[in-house]
Amino acid sequence: MIVDRRRLVAGAALVVAVPALARTRLPRVLLTTGMGRIVIELDTVRAPVTAGNFLRYVDRGLFADGHFYRVVRPNNDHNPATISVVQGGLSPREDLMPPIAHETTAITGIRNTDGVLSMARDAPGSATSEFSISVGDNPALDFGGARNPDGQGFAAFGRVVSGMTLVRRIDRLPADGPSDSPYTEGQMLARPIAFAIRRIRA
Image 1: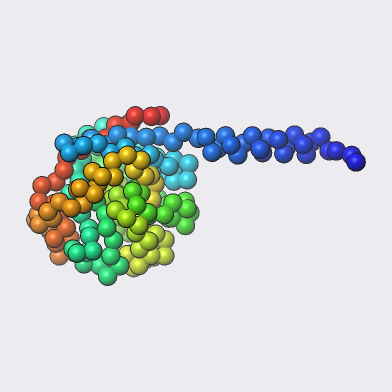
Image 2 (image 1 turned 180 degrees about the vertical axis):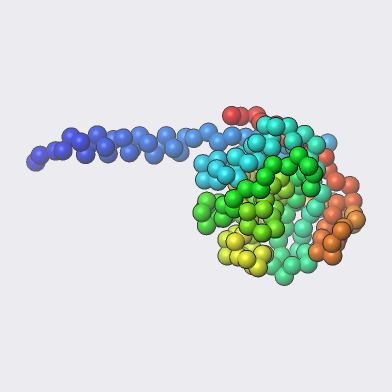
């Protein structure tokens, strides 16, 4: 039997490459509130545009004065495709960076499951700084889901690796704060939770 050495070398390289990819250390950030801390891992491999945008906000110090300000639960959701999320970010202000391209869950393979972060948006390609954390699984937020009439879903890009107990505590807070839209009525936190975010692993 004749062995093609070139095929052996190529095959060995592939075997080495797969474990190396599996060992990729994804960046992590620490979100600190007066109620406790949340550690988030950002998937810069599968969602490079969205996770990279989030990291730019972190690295520029823009999330030094962020807030969780909205909680959406089945008991206060005005959309028939109900979800359960805690939403935060910077809200409209002048120092936001330009909107980013929309990375659907069909592209990334990251589903909006418990503890996953996704970007808030209006039209596809309008996301900037606002994000939500899923409390439980939210398939309505995935590509093809019914949450948004355009069916494009919401770009998922990271996950909570520590601190979901705190996320669930925030999700249960009173949400009778003032709202500027009937759609978010009964969803705005009476007392928004201030946070800051910094890198803890490159």
